[in-house]
Image 1 (cartoon, rainbow, N blue to C red):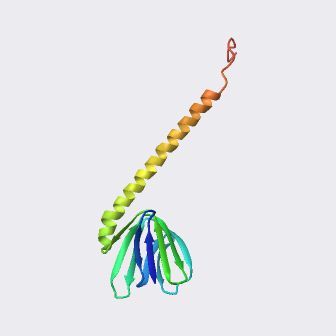
Image 2 (cartoon, rainbow, N blue to C red):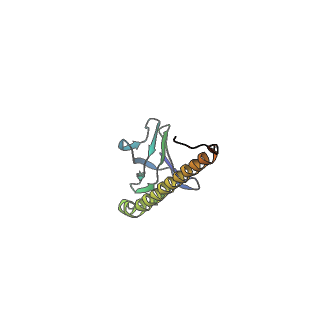
Length: 140
């Protein structure tokens, strides 16, 4: 099989001697062998593992993405960020923690932007609200 891993700015991996791929989506862990049916799934933050025809194994930490299987012979992963590695333990401790921190920073930035947006809308509404006519007392 061929395994392609890409980010928006780079081709991370293009290997043609892959015999199996292991990944995880929201429903759990799954494996892909040659001849697999066409398949599409969203990947969360995690590690994808594979085995080469000569028995070597490798892995890649991915920061969410999409995995597709086409024609039973090509597995393609498009992800925001990817880090290749040979040690699952090293990727899980260092890289995944860095990816998690980046996602948390992005989440906090989105929340701050939403709060700023809501505040701006409240100020626009207040500015557009007609002023009460002068000389009239409210409450009566």
